[in-house]
Image: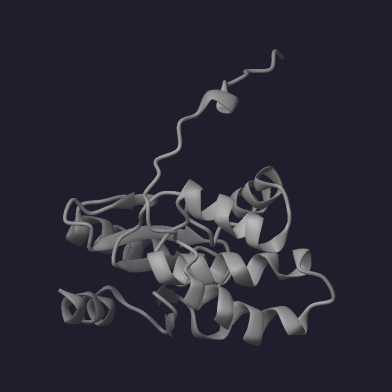
Length: 174
């Protein structure tokens, strides 16, 4: 098999004058996060979470700023951000819906639930509605097997879901 190469070294990064990692965020991270870790590099995940929480995704400029703040290379920071599923390098919707697809949820008809959500929103997993309101994802396991099927809306777990009771949850957001 041949390796397919892409010229990422020549990639142009959209930049803005205002930093993504603001002085306020840096001060909060210095005071609340960094003291809990033995090295600055060890705080990579919470720093990425803080930036993403503030901006709803991780722009490449923000990844560079976080790397400089922690004293690591931008490539190391980007490697980390692309390794974990919970980090977004492209904008996501205002609301993130993650439907569990574990074996427990599979047995409890998560497919019917996922199909209803796709039909209602007009998007598939990995897509965002045209209005930027919802992003739909699937997750391997949300750790709620006893109350399957389940899904997350943003950071709130919803359990024992049916197409009907989940429809109420989505309707409340619209």
